[in-house]
Structures are given as C-alpha cells and as structure tokens.
Amino acid sequence: MAAEPASRHPLRIGEAADLLGVSSDTVRRLVDSGAVSGSRTDGGQRHVDGESLAAYLVEHADVPRVGSAPTRSARNRFTGLVTRVQVDGLVAQVELQVGPHRIVSLITAESVQELALEPGMVATASVKATSVVVEVPDP
View 1: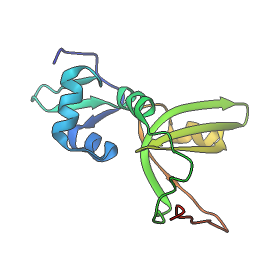
View 2: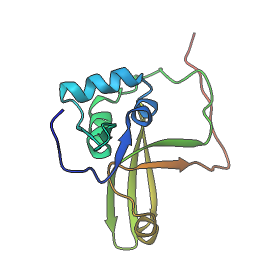
View 3: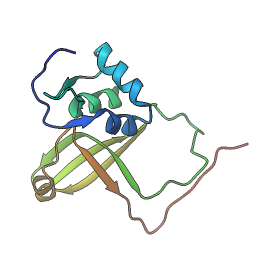
View 4: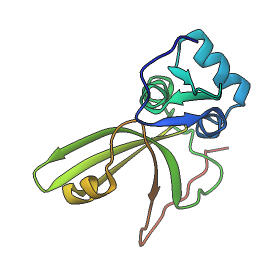
C-alpha cells in the first residue's frame, strides 16, 4: 500500500468492516485493490480513509426494489458515514450512508458547525417520530 496523505477521518480496518457489514479481510482486499483508499501508521497499523469509504458506500449502495421492505423493525439509531453536507443559510442537509440505506437529515447550520460534520466522518442519526409504519412484503 503506497503512502498517502493522512486522512482527516481515518478508520481502523475493523471499524470500516462494521460499517460495511463485512469482514476485516474484505476491507483489506478493498484497500489492496484500490477500491477504497488506505494508509499505514508508523507502527504499521492499517487505516481506511473515511471519505473514500463514504464514496464507496454511496456508489455500491443497494437500490431498494418495490416490495422489498425489510421483514423486521429497525432500532431508532443508525450509525454510518457522512457522505454529504450542504449548508444553505441557517439550515443544512446532512446525508449519511448506513449500509445500503441513505439517511437524510435537515438540521441547523449551527449544529453542522458545532459537530464539525463533513464527508467521511462517522456519525449516528437518531430518529424520533410520533408514528412509525412497519411493513412486510406481500406473500
């Protein structure tokens, strides 16, 4: 693996594997093949570039098919990688890629600044709703 500039959002191989839902070996192969950027610390520990991983997740996210709703309800916290931050005046749109799912949040520009949100960093979206619809596919 060639030496690269230090990532602003380095992830350990295991962290990247958890975010992708794959094994650490799979992440190593993605880095070795050049599909995702990576680097080594002076001590030899491998890291994945968060921005590169975010781009990979967006590019390889499964597009949901009609009638392919999950058969179980999910918890209300979703940890993934920030893939886009767009600030417009007082508000901002933040996108996270959580496995095959894209989460979009509208928050204040002040919150984006306080959290220092930018593509490639790990973040958790918490969803609070007064009503949640749960569906299963037709038999």
